[in-house]
Length: 462
Image (cartoon, rainbow, N blue to C red; front, side):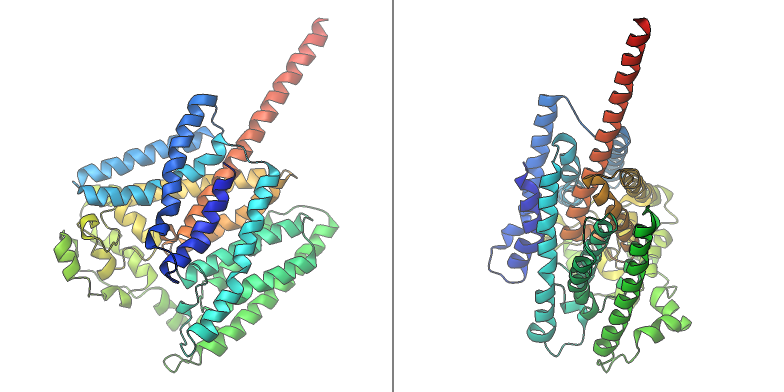
């Protein structure tokens, strides 16, 4: 079972790229991660029936049960087609087995370390690929959208690389990594984010670094390390701003540097929110053929991310039941297959329903579904915070995972990270590892306390 995480890493970070971009593998290989997920589901059931053990806090089980019940209710009230139900099941269920795997199979510290080394190697590989894409494959194109490494989009690339950087930072602060190694690897991981023109990096990296520093504890030596990290982060910020201005301002369509963009209130606010008004007629259900007929419409290109997030609240405000439960899992998700299209798939074209995770979850699962998803992230953050207090291998990873959780949360209104396989699969798997690891420690401490109490009682009796 230890081979499964390796296959997952290779699948979402290499195989998908070889199949969708290089076309040297059949497109069917992109379903490998979902196939593994289905096999894991069967394995987990058999494992639980065999061992009668399941190392996961009960809160997660309760939350998953409520969430699945919520999804089923949303399907029923929206009278979804079999195709959209199948699509919804793929979106919302494929990640759960990877989250549950560590609860039934205990990975050793050595195994997790090997997995993380492979992840680091695959992250470092993004450096030469990104520069090849920018200066050779797509030479002459000023847009950084084409610089995506082996991932789905340039934004996904930045999210992954920043996440790996802050995990390395946690290992450095816990004295598991030297300063030279941190700087060298950090620079190689950071440079691709400077040429894909993803503004979100300027938000994700500082918040993630601050999270790691804030929850770090130690003596004078650790404080020195923190001071050096702050200097390095500032240096990375200057590098990003310089590279962004060089490549972005070369585009004749936009001659505004990153500094002017951030300091111009009107421009910055217009980038975030334009107060777009939405026509209520957009909520008229459309079948597959009608969806295809509207596929050329791209009204959402004039909408900002906040406009896209506000759209479901605005258009569903007169339908409180659907505002609470959504339009149904898979009923809004974009797809090219007509037999899987839901009645509201066209919303991804006309209002950008699938552009941000918050907007997408609100459209499909309503306010209740979005709330439960946020609660899930908070639970992961709390388990990572508690586990980070232990000076063990899983505790070191938990210190970095605090920042990764912050990155994932900040990405929800930024991009639909649920649609990025490399981000979502890895986040759920390692979040499951964090949750199960902390639960195992709690049980061990509880058992130790009980044994000590029994031992003390026996001595008193004697």
